[in-house]
Length: 445
Ligand SMILES: [Mg+2]
Image (cartoon, rainbow, N blue to C red; front, side, top):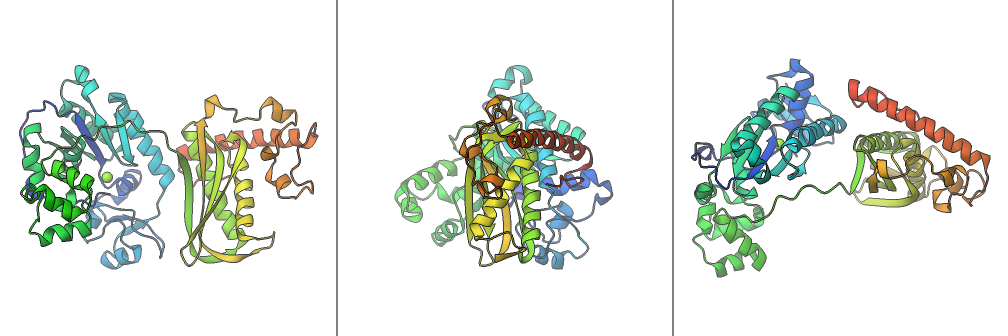
């Protein structure tokens, strides 16, 4: 959800010369809230606020809710006071990511490969390679807006400009459900109207410093000389970037998104807890969600990391790396559970020695599932796994052999066979979830 300030006067017709305007910024309107309305049409027109729980923050708010002053990152408790009649819904990240993928790959990716996704609901596109077919960048923007609305029953806004800086500001000004073209030769005039905070790199502290020098709008920046800007920012690089941006220039290229480095899920407990069952139950859900995301993206992971947050808000993480990549919660969860107990110095008891505020799991060391042996290799089946591939039950001593290599062990084959069956069960669950929603079923591990 964009928190950039809006300048009403900037949302107007800036002209129709599209030459050189090959950068599009596509931004879904109130994405999470719009998605909830799309699947619960009865909510249309009502203030919808995503983020429940007494200790959570607002992740998204529909435009109806924003009229009550509700904004993203605001504590949910405050949003409830501002908008008691609001419809408060929990975050369903798995669902939002699925739709995000349908937008990014199924719609934007059809136009060009040069899509730089910057968040779940926002992307830059360099459409220069697509103009032979589409002729005009605004034709692309119009098609994207129409297709998103038709297929997904949500709206998006599009900025069309000669660079990322201007395209992003243009989409913000066009919101909601609009498109704005800023011709190349109007870019300085356009950005000149903007408040300082709309320029990336100008935070509250720098804004205050610049204000104290009489600089309030971006156009004022062009009036101060390089030395003064250097003194205000304290950094030659920042001063240079600001001087460029103040004229509406930005040479950052659109970089097609690199593959994610890690995938994970985490949750905050309703209240701090030492209850081992509650913690493991939550960790299991996180593993389930993470594995499901891996499979949806056709990825497998080798490294498993558990993250814990304590009541005093400090974090702790611990990782382990498997011998071969996996995309199965049935593999990830036992390792995560063992990591958790090891981190807390906990035995098998029902009460953990330390209370937790949050727990989560992430996986990294990602590879394409198709190019890696997700299912057990022949070596595994022959029982020649290396120590690092031992199951947690072995490694953490439940079998009493401390995870030593097992050769010709029938138990290993049996376990792998069970692993393969569980994995196909998980894939079946993916299909159910894709039809009935992310929370409809989960596997009992
Ligand atoms: Mg958005």
